[in-house]
Image 1 (cartoon, rainbow, N blue to C red):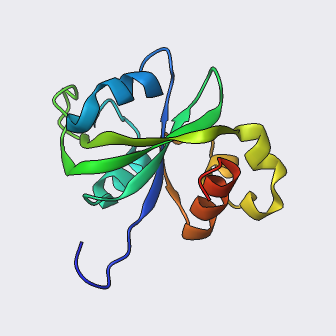
Image 2: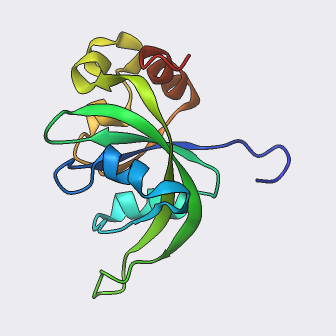
Image 3: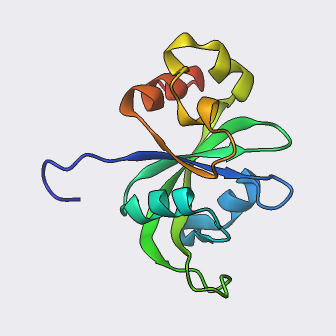
Length: 144
């Protein structure tokens, strides 16, 4: 990141039965690719990610909760699992778990988070998170 550039924040959704926080942690410092995204809005968010950006790791489906924080370790590049060649991916590594998971129910109950993409477009798998939302969710998760 260049001087004066601020870190962006994101939220990455995954079904824990497909890829869980524990699996992300087990991947170690090398991390893993965040592949399989097939939504054009989510693709644009992946393309905007920069090395060093942080993202909430969100268990969708079962759990519906933010459980940890990951860091982008490699910027957008082609996703070899996409036969069309239209989509790409980033690499991420686990940074730390939240001390207490923050549930979707808690987020929806917080008036200051009413504009959060997770509340208004819950199906989007890669989402931007504002600095204020990031700070509030981190505080709710015991990270503040």
